[in-house]
Image (cartoon, rainbow over all chains, first blue to last red; front, side, top):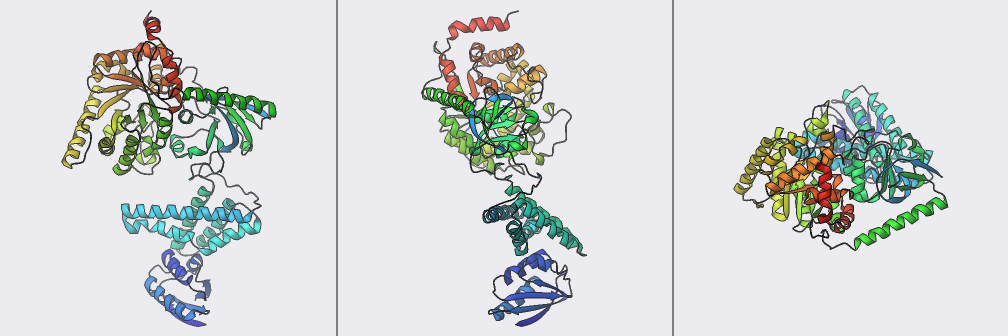
Length: 85
Length: 555
């Protein structure tokens, strides 16, 4: 399992568009990808779960990636975060 | 077996399952579903249709209001792809054995409630989005978008009454006949049925119960009988009648290719009324001599916004080309009164039949009118198009219309766009004032065409849509026929022709009268062309005309 942290820069936080972009990206990998913020967790492949994380600008997200393609997945998710949030 | 009695307004016998017209926003009923896999597939199909619709809406919005304004439709597509949402619905269909509509509505409620409970105002607002996308999917599941009929086999379509915007969107290949609880003989359902040549029964009232859904029935559009779950004897009787009608139709088919000429050699033009380019096929199949009335409203009623010049041009060109050089008379938009399109944003009127409608809208909003005229003139390069203007009451209106037409032609010349310089212009004669002024109006135009429904309504002061007024709505009234005579005489004095494009033109009990009056053209539903040809060929005007005129005009 690999882990990384990301602090949200986007003013509104995880709204519909970034939630969709992240879940689409996560969906490409077989690894289980989980996001945690403020004690809430969500399956990163599920858009509406990400929206319900209630994550706002300045919040730090911890991302857990676990599976065969975890190295590629971490790389892709990091890029997706910096592009969308 | 039991029989419901209504009023037959379009002849024919149809045999099939009764099916109710699906309107959006209907109640969602929970039903048990045995085949969960098939139901899940139904949901998946509806979901992908919704995705396509949203993609199209997105493209349209980007073009019209830019990407910012279009973002909503993009967000909606994303939500419809959410796996929790999709799984939630599929699990419910599978686990509880319920129908897709119900599962979608329940899961939508759950998701909306979760979003609404969040502190964040942005997220709370997304609750409405979840409901919105779910309603779209439910609408598709209920068959609202698929032409109102969610059935694989053709059906007898039941409804209260259909609005014009609904009739234009119907999937006509799925309809065997109509049964409505309300409506009148001149309602749009009745007109549509006659165009299609299928039976229609109206005014059956409360007897049209939801429990009829899916039951087999035979309807007879002549007698107005709706026989539900018919027994063998009744079934045999009505199917025999159906066979007889079909045999009669075959007999009429032998008249194809023959002339519309009386025994004493008078020729009459028999044209067709159509409501959309789809209707050209029945015109050709029934040997119509041309299009006497192409109602352009379909372009306006099936749209959420003003149809573009290009959209209109394509439709007109299509019809002109398929009619291969035969005359195609296209009537400019006749919106208003009972035909409403929301985006026109017309004020609610106390008395819409006498309000801002048809040509009055065109002269009030010349930009809308010009778009249509440009499309019509451009299409004139591809066939023999004539343009007809509805609801004329005054000479000045026609003069103003002609000025606008000349301006449009000058524009096209400047842009070097090809068009026919000699497009014929005609007017509808459907108000008593047009009849009274027909001597002067005839000098302004190339032809007259009488709209008998409106002319009857305005002459007799009887609402054509009225429920209990059929007794008083008498199109055979001598007042109406004398109006026709006056308009015909004035047309001929000015050397132009006169036709009838109202429903009355197909009434063969009046054909002899119309010929006596001097009507040159009759434009009728495609299915009425051959019966009318048969009637014309049996008439000898040298014997009948004088007597008819003496009776009509004598004191």
